[in-house]
Structure formats: C-alpha cells, structure tokens
Image (cartoon, rainbow, N blue to C red; front, side, top):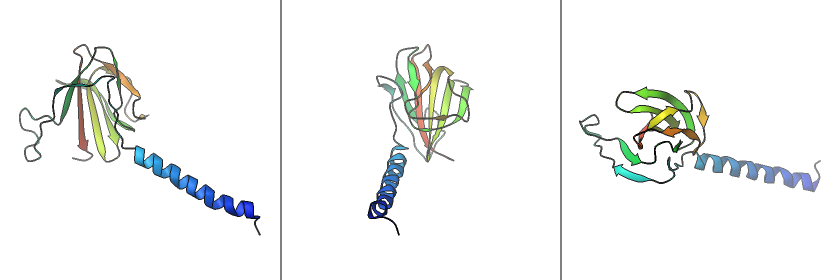
Length: 140
C-alpha cells in the first residue's frame, strides 16, 4: 500500500503533465511578428474563387530595414528554404494546420527539415527592405 504522501503525488503529477501539454499545444500555433517594427505596405487581397488571379496577394507586404533579422512567424518545420523567381530567397514553415511563407531574405539561415520556434532567426532582410508574409492552409 502506498503512503498518503505518495498517493497524492500521482494525481498532482498527472495534472501538472496535462497542464504542460495543454500549454504547449495552445501556444504551438501562435504567430509572432517577423520584423522588429511592422509597416504594412500592401495588404492582403485574396478571393478563394479566383486564387491565382493576376494581382491577387495571398499575404501582406511588409517593409523593414535591409539587413535586419527576419524571424519565424510561428513554431514549425521548414518545408522550403531557397529562391523563387520574382520573390527572391525565402522560407516556408509548416505551423500546425497552416503554412507560413516569408520571402525577401538575403538568403535563408535555415534548411529544409529544420524545426524552428517562433521568433527564431530565418535570415536577414534583403536589399529592397521588403518582406512578403503569407499564410495558407496546409495542402491547399
């Protein structure tokens, strides 16, 4: 038979573990600003009926200081790190049910498959001082 103090320890340990898991899961999809100071220069303009229409923007365009650190907008895993035509260098992160894209870097400081926490450095802002931040549902 267990001592009364040990009998009390098991429920306390279970509640503590459940609280830690809940806290970790609840914060897993919280997004943070990717730049120190946010200035939106072009807003979101998207219609799901015509997702690839000319001029459609599935994210926002932010301005910052060239060379400043660009941070991960969310906790996630890097699914792409490289260059795209017209977008330059950037990173895509799988953040739970969403994918965040951050383009306009000098070059990525992470590689595909890396796990990152929100606010972790992804690279430095390119010479134009423009960051494209997008979000979409994974698989869409």
